[in-house]
Length: 289
Image 1: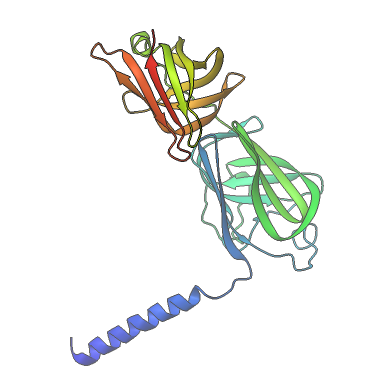
Image 2 (image 1 turned 30 degrees about the vertical axis):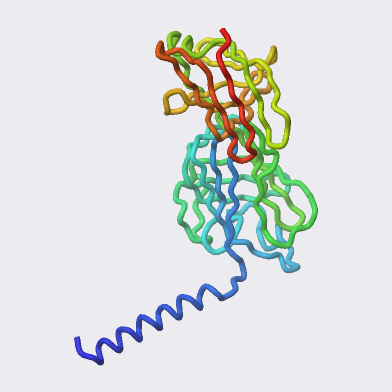
């Protein structure tokens, strides 16, 4: 390659880089956005472009009643989640879908299409979409820019909201109940029993109490004094468990840091240690019986 060829190649590369960099700075009429939410171990993400109303009459005007529309602009809006969910009585398989809607004055139909990479004018026919869901619109405060949000987030579900202008369309969904691996009787017996425990929080005086672990049909339940406080959820690491908070017998919160069990030469637990790396809270237990 001669000098001229090299010079032209370098100049072309530099120009391409310059143009690419400038393209990222240009404003868009409908800016891209993503919103994500984890609900009981299921991760959700909505990717969309956000048109602005700019004084236009939206539903029944710009967006026609009874016609298929993507709630966004440019590329079709997508919804992705990594575990099956339920909307009403219907189970929706985990995956990534393009999102479409048929607005109505009293009722909307939400369409989920397995072809996620469509342009907004490449509208699917309703019968082509895998799922057809019903949602009710309601009136709320005015938002000029199209917005998706997750609300009512709880241990078993949440609500995905589409909000544009004065109109909000709510799509409540439920996640699957967390399934905890059960231990066999011999494995459970190694850990069950009563422990003397010291609770330690930064800048506070240590507190002593008791912690009893019992086997309930293969599930390890922890009782702080006499109240059911935790369920011990086994991890893939031998002797490590996650502490799961309970409400009315159901898991509502699982801590990130593991409780680590110490075993004696006979294979039976002698104690355990727990450290919340964020708060510095420590839990130290020693078998008493």
